[in-house]
Image 1 (cartoon, helix red, strand yellow):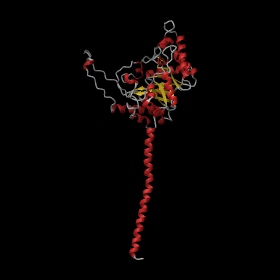
Image 2 (tube, one colour):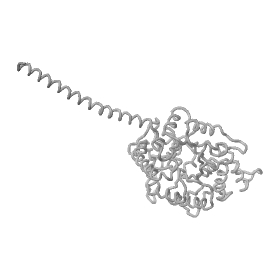
Image 3 (cartoon, helix red, strand yellow):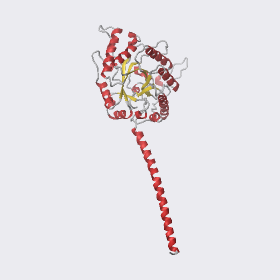
Length: 408
């Protein structure tokens, strides 16, 4: 074999060896690249498929208040994807469901319950006794005069037994008594001076819980109220709850409505409220959560001795809407709230948003929600001032606040 032949074979061998090295490198790298891409796509697809209920499946149910219009179309799809609990927004309140002594309107309430059952969604009943949206006939006796305590409590019992029994085994929890505590800063006035209180004193509260428990011993029973984190009202609610617990009234927990603002409550106030309730051995649900972006408008400066400027002299300020600054504050407030919710997961048994998306919020026709939970006592107006209080925007898309809630 001459030297030229040896050289050619040597070069051929070197070339083949080099090709083998390159091929091996490609083969060894390709699986890593494929896994990386597949994992990224899978993660993105998984995030899109998951709803709020999936992120919080190890914590507590995530619910939403609904009306019958939300049971169809885009809202319906969003409810099924994101939530695993529903609360009828208005259709189980006494004035709606029992407008006259011998008349019950079951249609809307039945539709909501049937929808939830069909989609394996839990149901909270709201509510059995409230000073707003009440049935006026309840407070008038057969003689046309104000009803006496005995008859009023009998009517309350009949109402609770009829409604609770109809949905027994389907509704797992009830807001039994709603907003019975006084709103003022008068610490001596614990109870709201409602028709119920004026006729029955505070006895109607314990009676309602006992009636509800008798009607459905398995249902969880809650007292529900707003501004539960504000110190004066917080202490009034605590006194009410302690009295119920001390008297062995069948109550399972407290519903903190959570109609909040961008700067209210603070983390300290929220924790304090939770600690007080749980110290009584009661559970907590956040039952009507929304966080309005509206803040009180500054009052015009007036100089003593001078006539304040006429309102008409001040041109209206254009509504800035949902600005990036307001969005950032809402994101931070929602994040704070859910960080604390998760801390108290052993005591919190549910979190419910009040309405589905920013497309419609009950706060929009009540000044954007500046009054918080007290806005329920306001008459709705045709003037819309958007509150943008929820996790889904007006197009039902996830807002940044949504991601702040699930990013943990």
